[in-house]
Image 1: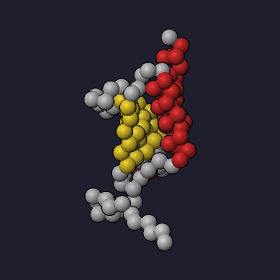
Image 2 (image 1 turned 90 degrees about the horizontal axis):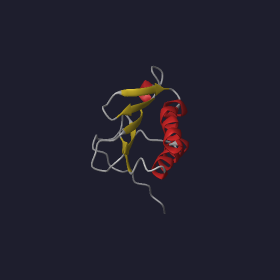
Image 3 (image 1 turned 30 degrees about the horizontal axis):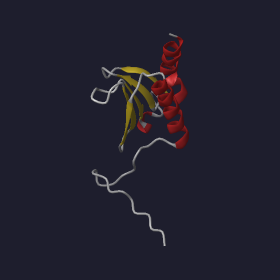
Image 4 (image 1 turned 60 degrees about the horizontal axis):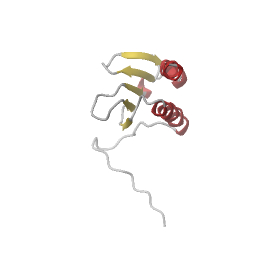
Length: 114
């Protein structure tokens, strides 16, 4: 009765990398607080075969201010999580999402405190 048809990919198949529910909840919680503080206005998700990327924008027409990347291939090396700034420089890398999001959490405290 219920047939699940996989969504076709451009790369001819393969496993898609994505965020699990707890990871996405933590990222969206931070995003919501940054929106409430008036700092971010838009976001984008890019789910590919090699990486899942969450991008946060100050304005829709600009480059993303921050990107949170999950690359499972780097799990045993540098850590699969990375926080990347607007210029493309890696700001923080680690094995835990909480540690990678810590600089943004501190920035949020400064924004609210001003």
